[in-house]
Length: 311
View 1 (tube, rainbow, N blue to C red):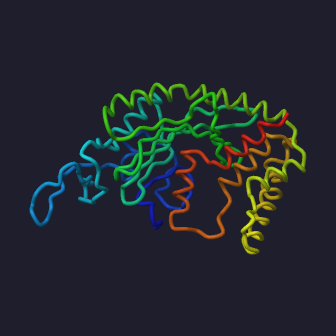
View 2: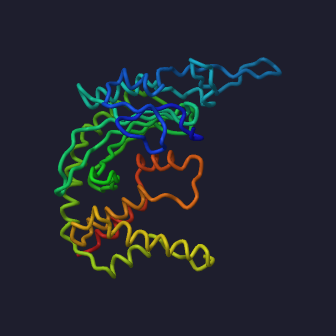
View 3: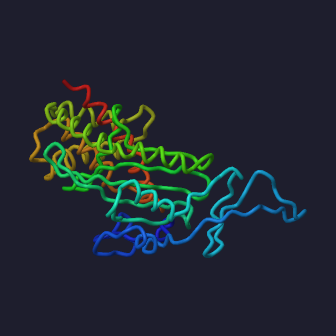
């Protein structure tokens, strides 16, 4: 099993790390909670000094109630959001009939996530499936995050561009009035349609912007730079990545039907950032890639900024 993935389920196909319980259909929150192994609670306990048996002020320890697993040491102001509460929040946010495609636990319960499919739509002539992703940490190291992540159906690459005119994610720390903050998230994410509408407008504009082969090479060189101090091996590896992005992705079969446009370039970079396997796998590579999908990928955003300058 992966160094980070503890429990999870996925619908219809093997998830990104090749693990999990595979089922044939989406499920509701009650079923997802059990299938994902998230039907447990976080309890908080005082920290007692072994030598003096005195309570250490200002801190608590978060513990999983099912097996007494220590999840992390947190401030005594930290307020846990239980897994059940997270699913209930997402249920309310998306309304009746919401179904979950995947959910799970990372790093022995320290981080959890759930992913719900929203109503698909056609954007710039292509089928796009928006997903709502909820991630939470129980160890005090991360915030509660909710994000809309559009997926291009034909090749499953993410198109979660950072738009200046529409928000696609919200986050808050585990301090203060959590219920009030979750209500703020609900109000923000109910505007997900605004993000998708703006995305459709931007994609329409990008399709109209033609891009030359020379400009593609210029942009690829910018995204995958060779620095003055790079050695011969690193230079060779970067040249291979540049060639890969140009030939395998920009000129790929699933993009060949598109004219050479800014839209095609952004999709090629997104394919590259989403699907290219690294030269060396780290134990938590797949999980980190997933979290970058939630937060947004800087390489995709930079590609979008570059092509926006085209006339």
